[in-house]
Length: 460
Picture 1 (cartoon, rainbow, N blue to C red):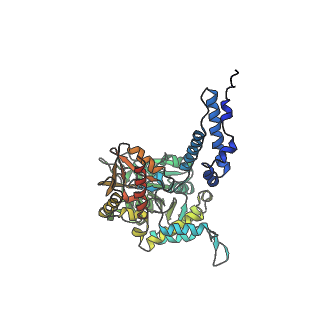
Picture 2 (tube, one colour; picture 1 turned 135 degrees about the horizontal axis):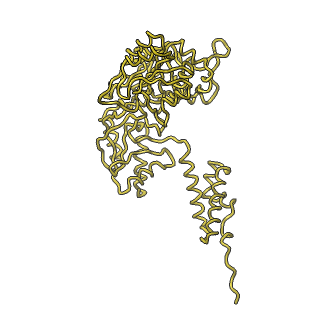
Picture 3 (cartoon, helix red, strand yellow; picture 1 turned 180 degrees about the horizontal axis):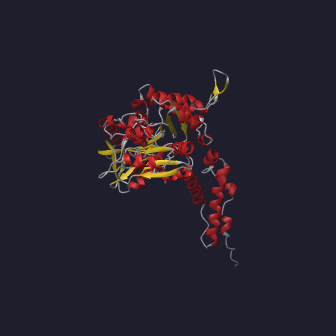
């Protein structure tokens, strides 16, 4: 009696084309296209062959399908997607900072779906200037003579330094030599711009006389004042205010540039928050140029805005670096729509950032309670929301959160994050999952309750 030959484990592996046509993978092939899915199929088969070569049995068809689907799902999680921010951090840098208003979103769609008058003068029928409409809006909202937009605030500061102080000296206090996030430091930006850094004062104290001495001892191109938007100095501390510094710079015929960072156009103290220098205040104090972000307290898209005296703004607009830093039609459209809210005195209602910051604790508690009652899960507890985004360091606002106690809080939080539609980012603290309605758009309330109920039912 002869024995049957051993089964070749490699022959048990399905063909690449058979896997591609498998019903469990067909929806992904249809959605993503075969060119994207086939490499993951080949990768799974190569891994199976390597395992067989090491003496492992041939994987089942179900195992191979699961490996390919896991690779696809990992890819989908890396793609840019909309998420629900339930962390309570209003300007969450990792989640894209400021959500846009309905009007700004509509302006984006309108600009994206056809042609625009980006650089065309409709009245004269000839080439126009990009961003001139936005410049007029910036002037109207802030009181500046002129305005300019680039792709972020670091770029705004870089353009100012390169355009007005290349190979020349820039005066700055040691108290303001900060890191603005992502490893970008003011001294490094100064160095890359070609400007020469001149430090005055000490790390905790700088006096007007320190600026005066430096201005008298050597030629200075400009004085740079930087708002410490992401930390505070407490204790034995002193430095001159912006009006005093502006008056000094004016006496010496040197422009004063103020980097106010967060781009607040409203008084933050109205909402129980510490004072944050507004763009209007910096201009009124005498700054010749003010630079700020578009996607922080302004509540618009990522951008760097420069406002101030026309002579300096126009000089920057003509600089060759400006072309490399300019924004596209989509950013301009969203910014114009956002600034219109301030002109109409409706920012608190229409700009999501300000709607979130101004939300009353009792309203937030009612929303969290509605989530809890819709599912019968968890409790509602008092908490604190944060501003975030490098703005108003350590400032918090009273809020209420839906709190879910589970043996595996990180597992539940992950289940909410990896949802195929509208992932939810929550906060895990004290061994529980916290969902703060302050940063959840009201139109997503039902989605939050439904997602938690589904994840809970799956044993998360």
